[in-house]
Length: 325
Image (cartoon, rainbow, N blue to C red; front, side, top):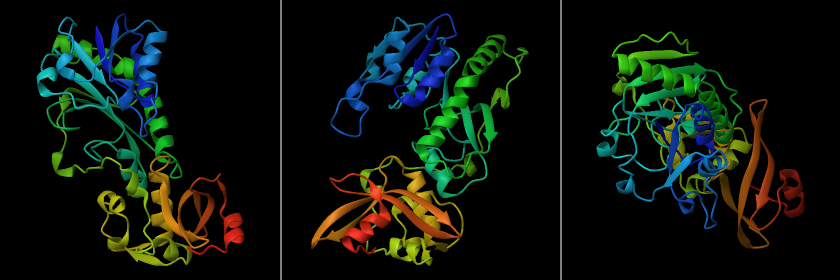
């Protein structure tokens, strides 16, 4: 029996891959915990399971984990809750967690933003054995690849979790077979680096990404980041939003402001997005910046949205309100 922990749209490729096993059970969280807003959002993992006659347990508290389930091996991909060490210990062959970064780089809940903000040449995904610390356990599998530097976070995750879905069944099948034998015996060939026994991460190289908040995308006029970006000027990293400073891992102090704004827009899209406050008819109004580009090293703001209005071209808004950033 494979017990899968997942609750997100990004969990689906892994769950679909694991459904090739004879018996799979989904443990997920109640729908009300999925959304960023007050509306009830259907749980996509639970919906797929129900449509495909996979047994589903929706647990608000993992203390209610059914003791009747056979805990041979667990698999996790974007579950939404910390799985306690006491539950992990119940699984004979552990719980394998699929994570969208090249661990130990970019541990935590938002790995794509680190990859995007740092303009990394390579990204990838990891499968690790869970332990009591977040994204800390030994590596079972890792796949390294290049993705377009113009992907936003959502597109980044879509690509990586899709690739996980292509390999998850074979990874778990091989790991389970080797675990039962106590040595690597399975001849399954995997497209990536497979480790048995699982390989300890180099914890000295670990980096972290934060849990995103709505205000992480706020470009305060006090920073003058947008003004400097549109003038193609540089900015001290101390004057960038906190989320950028937390994730930027290089040593530069002065950065091109256009780069900072564009990378923030990709990293924080679609949520929380980047936004600022502008004055329209003597009133302060929230302006969301939806689409940016870098052309000839200059920042181009393409599409924006005033609070309560439909998205428009930035030039159109400038002409209508003589808007200055």
